[in-house]
Image (tube, rainbow, N blue to C red; front, side, top):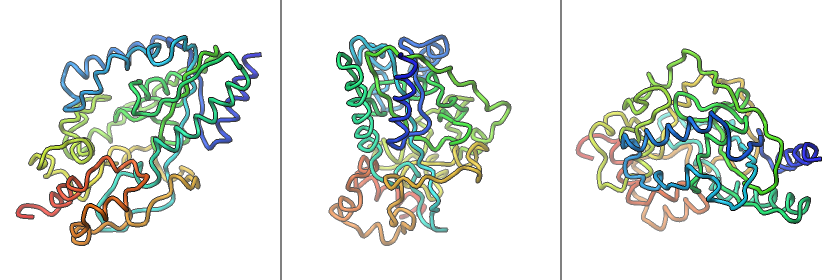
Length: 311
């Protein structure tokens, strides 16, 4: 009975545009415990930088997020699209090209939660996107969606690492899928490609040396000199460690989902023009965008940093 329910649940999730979809049992197995221990070591080393929320103790205890949770449904939403950035334009991380994925995934998973509640009326559920204190990539790995690569991104053998993740916690006990096995092998392209050496060792990203952290999360008035030196054209996040990953090759099928398609201005952003935009202009362009987290003054800070000394 529950096996049939799990299969129907996966079909419902895929009908909402998610793929892959997997199920993990709570509290998880040995692999998840290893990931939790790795988080503690990462925090103790200070790799989170100013992201204090990463130390939220609930992140290591999924049962604190939903009383009585027995299963977790992990879903992926591909943001690999056919469009490309215009040569010479400023660079924006692909995950931010479309609509705010927090809203997109949250809305779709709420539909899935209501469907499940209709099948099991006594059940309760909770939706988590990456703003919730959950080990999202570790739980996705536990549910079989893919493995955590050396660049700390989740990698699926057919979808690559261009996946936005969401989770539906439920009190319904469902049969679990097999956790994914790592397939990075001896490859070290991501470590070698990072311009600031942020991937200090396989599977460990030091936010204090990461372009994405400094362009999105840091509220400092200026970027550190080592970050400026490795910035290139990046003004909002960074995709370098994903661009070089062999699992993200040209064989990947682009998504046609309208919610992940890029806003044209993000593909052809020019420094001289963008520096002339006032706060209201930025506000208009960033409506319903995950990159609204980057305030207008931060965009200007990042753009000036790409222009070099004296800009």
